[in-house]
Each structure stands twice: as C-alpha cells, then as structure tokens.
Length: 390
Image (cartoon, rainbow, N blue to C red; front, side, top):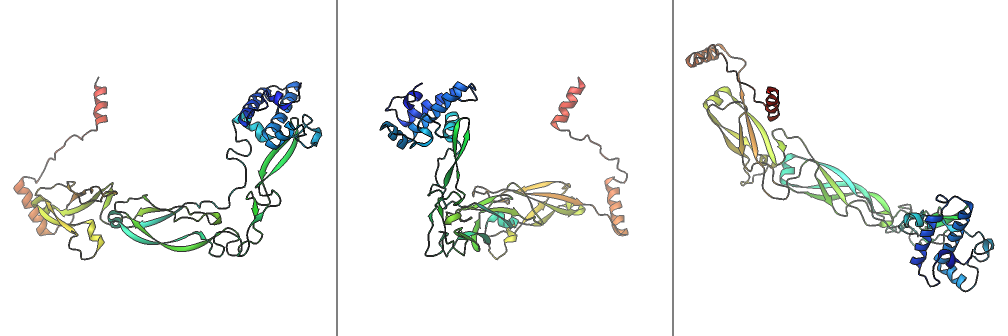
C-alpha cells in the first residue's frame, strides 16, 4: 500500500486542516483495534495515525511536501514506527478534547478570579422588616501590598520554566501495539503555569494575596426573611495572583421575637383577656413592630387600640391591615393577625365564687347540659364518608 500520507487519508494535497481532521476521524473509527482487532487492520490504523501526525503538523507537512523526512530521521522516517498523539485518537472518537481537554493546550494563568464568600448575620425582626445598616468584620484574602499581586519579591519577576519552555505541559511517550503514544501532562516543575517565580514574595509566599480582616458596611433592605442572601459584588476573596475578587453573600438569620411571629409578610400575635372583659367588651392597647425601633419619631405608631367586642370567644381573630412586614421590593405590606384568648379564673375567693354562682343562677346555667356538636370534617373526610355510604 502507498506510504504517501495524502493517499493513506484519501485527501488531496491542497486539503485544509479541517478536511484532514475529518478524514482521519472517519478512518480511525473504522480501523481502531477495538472495532477491527485483526493484525492487518491494526497495521493500517498505525499508518493512518502516522499520516495524520504528519499532515496535522504544519512543519512536518511542509517538510514532507519538500521531499524531506518530517520526523528528522527518527525511527526510520515516515511509515517506520513514528509516534502519534493519543489526543488525536481521542479527537477521532469524541470530536475533540482528548486527554488535554476541550479547552486547548497551553499554560494555565496565574491570575484567576477569587472565590465567593458567605457569612451569616443575625438581625432582629424589626431590623429585617424595616431594613438596617450594619458594619461587618470579615476575614478574606486581599491583594498583597508588598508585591501587588505579582507573587514575586520586589525587584524580581517570573522566569520561563526550563522544563516545559513556557508551555505549561510536557509530553510523555509510551510504547504500545499502536506505536508510540504521546500524552500531554501539566509540567511538574512550574505546576502548569509555564513560568517559575525564583524569588517569591515573603509576605504572601508567591500567592499574590494574604488573609486580612476588614470592615464592610452592608445595607440590609426592608422585608428580608430567614435565609435571604444579600450580595455584595466583588467583596469576596481576591483571586490567586491578585486576580479579581469574587462576591460576598450575607445570609440573614432573624432572631425570635417575644411578641410576634412571622408568616410570609404577615405578623401574628396573641392577646389574653379576662373572662369578664371578653363578656362585657373592652379596648386593649397592642404594640406594633415599630415600637422596637425606639426613638421619638412622632410618625411611628408604636401601638394601636384593639376593640374586643362584648361576647368575644376564645380563638377569635382580628386582622389589622398593613401592620405587618413591608414587601421585599417595597410593594405593599403584610397584615397583623391578633388572636384573642379568654382567660378563665382558676382560683376564686368566697365572694367571687358567690357572685359567679349568682350570675349562673340568673342565666340558668347552674347545671348546664352542654352543647354537643359534630366536629367539622375536612373535604377528604366528607369524600371518604360519601364513598363508604355506597
């Protein structure tokens, strides 16, 4: 069979790189030993792979077109056992990427974006509802002031790695039945950077950043709730090599309030009234959440009158509009739901007992039979009873 790489790949001599790669991928899929394990096909696969190695390398292709040896005489020239890249084989089956990854080869940058940071902040219910400004002390990585992020001591600079010559990776050759397989791995000498810092900065040990405590001012918007995260752009960790900082997220944790509980943007509270007040009716003074803000602002209503109507039963609720938590985006405000609990006296002196017995006699309630009523069933309970009736 012809040893001409153009003939082996079935491409014209003026074929571009894309045409050559497509031809190789097609043949590699057909001839790979995993598909056709017979010795003749294996030998053909080696020849096709060596042909692609020549035509995919501009320098080797130019040397072959001039009539020279693209391998410089190594291993007997073309068709005599020259090596080929394992990455090219992977490209043939997976459309690119191979062992070196789809992002291409080359040194990795020293300057990279920093990580995002997360801190938790406890606030009171009123602060979460109406907003607050806090100062936070955070420990994060900041740019080294000695080397300004370069990582090298003042007056020095990184030098090109002598092992990989700045490529950031080195080739490793292994022999197999396919021939010599060449893979690329990150250079161990420079850790893939392509450069070495011979004299690292003593302050940051060549990282270009140091840990530092700093103070930030964070504005918590009105309406936040448990778990809400406030994002502070570019206030997180500075990246390696003095790279741009990530973001800082402040996660809100609202402490328990002694009076109010929050459900969405609504506030709930419970008031207790004596049995006599529930029967006769009264007016109570109920505090608002604004009372926690303190100060003497006359515009803040720190309490409001709650009318308990005569005959109010335990468990009765009243909804006070727009007394809850403001919306997070400044739209609307929740309600305040007040539940009334009637306190029944447990200890009576003789005079109080005498008066209550007299009231019971007047109302004919000395020996009540009680009013027994069915428990209200849920929708599912009523459906179950309807099915059981049939």
